[in-house]
Image (tube, rainbow, N blue to C red; front, top):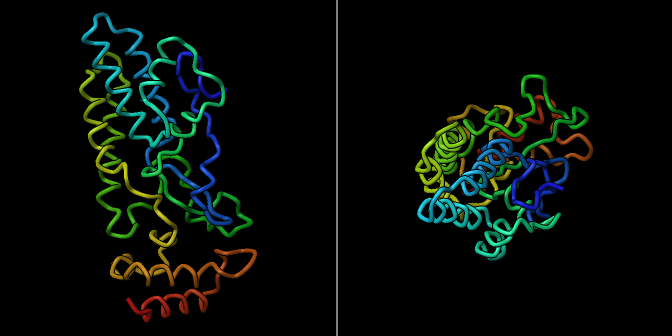
Length: 241
C-alpha cells in the first residue's frame, strides 16, 4: 500500500498513466526525483499534524490543497483533505499516481536495459537530475530551470525547522509549469548524435524526423552504425520546417 491511512506516501513507483502513450522501449523518468516528491508530500502531512493553532492549520491545509491540484489529481482536493483529517485514505487511491507522476515533471527516455542499446557513456538517468535535460530542446530549458528551483525549495522545506514559506515558494514554481506535457524523446539530444547548437537549431519537425530515423529499426532501436547516424543527421537537417 503506497498511501497510509493518514495520507503519507511510501514513495513506491506506481505505473504511469496509460494515456501518456510512452513508446515501446522507452520509459518515463522524473526530473524532480521521486524520492524528493515523497519527502515533500510527507513533510506537508507532518506539518499539518503538528499545527498548533487554527491559523497554522489553515496555512498548511491550503498548501496541501494547492499541491494536490498542481499534481493533476482528477478529483476534489478538499475531499482528499477530509480523508487525511479522518485517517481514512483507502489503499490504491488515485492520489498515489498523481503524487508519483506529475506530467510536467516527466520526460520520455530509454530504459536501463542494455539489450536496447544504452551506451556505456550514457548511464541510466534514473529519477534524479542525472538526466540529459541540459541537452534538451530550447523550449524546455525554462521549465527545467523552474523544476530545479522547485526541487531546491522542496529540499529546504523538508529540513528540520524549515519555514512553511519554502513550501509556498515551491508551489509557485510548480504552478508555472503545471499545464505542460511530458517531454518527448525527440526533444532531447540523448547521445550527442549531433552538436548541441545544431540540435537546438532544428525545428520540432526536424528533431522528430532525426530521432525517427535513429530508432525506427526493429529490435534494438538505439544501436546504429555511424553511417545510419550520419544519414539521420542529414535527413533531419534537410527536413522542411
